[in-house]
Structures are given as C-alpha cells and as structure tokens.
Image: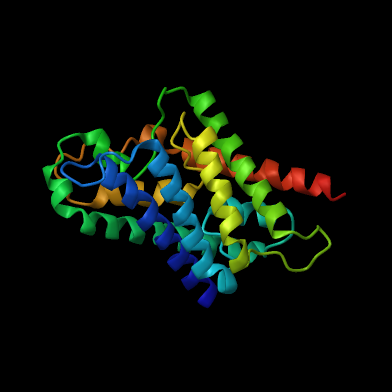
Length: 241
C-alpha cells in the first residue's frame, strides 16, 4: 500500500509545482506573467525533481503511467501492480491540480480567457493535427522513458530496476531538455496522468468562464505517450540483447 501512496504523493507534487507555474503565468493579475516558456520548462524540471525525490525510495518514482508501462514491457515491473500505479498517478495528478486551483482561486475567478484556464489543467496543441500531435507526444515520451531506463542503469537480466532519489536530478534535467527542445508543438504532456487527471478535474470543478475540457484532443496526450513508452521499452530490450 505504501508504494501506491508514494506514487500518489510524488505525482501530486509534480502537478502542483508544474501546473502551478502555468497558473502563475497565464491567469489574470498574478505576479508571474513574465515567466514565459523558459520559466515553464525550468519549473517543470524542478517539479519532476521534487516528485521523483520524495517518492523514489518507496515506489520507484514512476509518477507517470508511460514509465510504469515501459518498465512492465521490459519485465522490470509486475504487471499486477500496473493498474494500482495508474490509479495512484491519476488521482495524485488530480490532487496536485486541486491544490493549484485552491492556491489561485481568486485569479481563476478573475480570468475570462477559457483557453488560459484550461492550460492550467491540461495540454493543447499549438497547431491542431491529430497525426503530428500524436507523433510529437510519442517522440517526447520515447525520449523520456528510454532516458529514464539508461539513467537508472541496469540490464534486462537484473531483477530490480527503479529510480532512486539520486536519479532525481538527471531525470529533472532530461524533462527540462524535452521541454526546451520538443515541447512547443503540444505542450509536452509526455505523461497520461499529468493530462488526464487534471482534465477530469477541470470538468468537475465549478470554474467561472470554464469552457469545455477539449475531450476531442484528450486521447492524444494519453495514447501518444503510452505508444512512445512501448517503443522505448522495445528499444531498451534491443539494446540489451
């Protein structure tokens, strides 16, 4: 049970600090309007660092269903635990974004731009094209998951394979690099829970000027990262054959 709790905590920390900076940037009358893309990429890297650091020694700090799936594909994680990890990650993401909403409640009330409000919960593409948006998310997640495998070390024959707290910094730098280099087209969800959990919360919360939750796009930041994770897992097994 502790592993699920720590996945919940780690993912909540990730979303609180990650979407917190988006809220600080785009909501009305905050003091962070000048942060820009550099600020977002840096803050998401720090968010990953904190999420990994607090959960690594107990749950392995997946904090991302794509990482969990990639580990299961390579035989490094028990398939029986995958549903529980997925649920903990989605609920943790919802909790993290709930705390963002509570922190910025008066700024949400003052904001009339519906797309800005949605941006503090979930991702959207700069240019909407299902195939290329899917490809972008898959490539970004492939880079993340394969990088996590190589950072954590080990080979297919090892029995244990998980991130430790000392891996928090290189993984954070990897996510920061993905944000700077690959994040522009879709906002780099690269994590199904990061997008799905907050999008569900957006649909549930009594937000002023909420608009719709863009469910037509929602499948891309779910299945694009999962596809990228599967390819990364297969690539990792190929490297270690």
